[in-house]
Image (tube, rainbow, N blue to C red):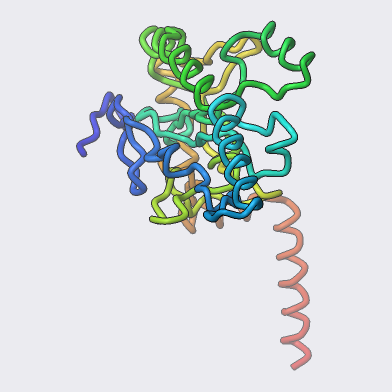
Length: 273
């Protein structure tokens, strides 16, 4: 892909680029139907014994809670491996930070349970029920996020020259997975950079820096160009040339003093020989 330039700056396309893992403009390849626990995985058995009947009833309860709550809601499903579906991941924005690194956007795909507002959340808590984090409330949240004009307006009216900050965010699904168990297909971009801590995967990415009011901090073109590009697009620090690094090393007073002492000791040793 050709990179358009303005002055001595280097910028990429305004559209998100396709990463090696396939994460691009259309998001993660995560499929809720494939990620959902199967009947055998939740202990459902086929047969005519009373245990088989009970396991079948519990299986029905599991999938009802999966649709509505994303968590056990009754004694029937307590202890079953029931968590909200969805996946959180980073996606490239196609923009470049003032420090030279690619800018990323954090995508929240796991249902948060706020689809019906704080009042409904309070009511569910008073009734002793879990938050609405199932598939159905998740669809409502997706619609709300899709109709929210704030991100689009911010992109349209922003300068296009962002200032970024490095953030660590959880990635993967609620079960601590970042890829499909069956096919091995990755749900996140650059899975080799993810690391596990406490059963959850995390990644660090350069994201749009916000002010105290939650508004993106933008820069003028001249400020963006003048900013030192200390990182490569992939987020790795720029390594200074050997000569430059050595000169910087030699400018430190402590370093010069140590080298001077070593030279005197070496000279004294040579004279003794």
